[in-house]
Image (cartoon, rainbow, N blue to C red; front, side):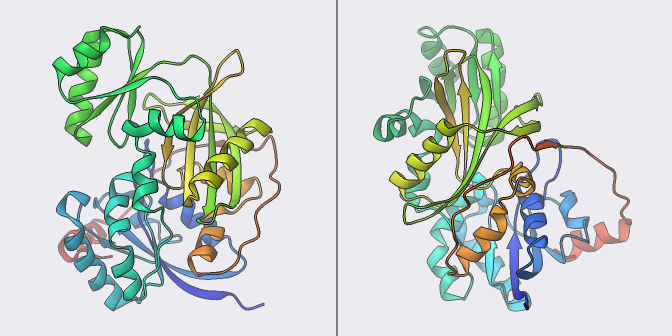
Length: 348
């Protein structure tokens, strides 16, 4: 059987201690027996490791930061499209999704496909809107408040018990045991990601995550839950194991079905000692640990590509329980000439 040729641009090449999803997404696509993919990396920083992983990324282009606006991004994407004839783009960062969602129609008019949630879906699951989301869809969420200043946070914490979780608008979360700690984290998070900062009730229990894929019509195409085995100081899973938990599958199915979610999704949850499930966050894209799902039998990146191309995808019905992932780091040796070429030309 001949493999289908496709040119796919992928963001999220920062495979560092807080990794982007781009590299595991590319690995899933590369392992497909049905796709013959040319992978175009889209990078924000010159030292994103994925740029230099030549066995995974065929060519990389620098693109403007989301803060520069969607029109600047669109112009740059058209320049890349002129050279590469992109079939699709898979964005993998929360902070860039707003721009890509707004550009979806304009990109499609140029022949570049995406497979993203609607703006309403994207905003509805925002951290600051999570309590309302929980009420609407019957999901238990911790009590949380968005704050815009230190004084605002001080007033909020008067009615809360320590520890509390202090969360950035897009990324990062810290556990604070005092107002002084919370204030330090507020400054750090607001500096990195802007306002608001989210103050959330701390829930004790076991951290479990779900990666899911929806087809936009209410169908759950893929779903793999895992329990975190090792967590970094940034709250990122450095090791995890797939688990058999019907309640998690039912929760993912209910959310995907009722929201008619289109694209990848990660659900971050806590299971308490009393067996209650609390939804902490909904990340509106494929997570960085998606290669565990691939290894367990559900190649979610491949399924996403097929959906993007308009193909019918049969929902996965099983995955291997007890599969573990253990993340590791290794050093690549790169010639300075490559780095210099990238910085001067914006492509490599």
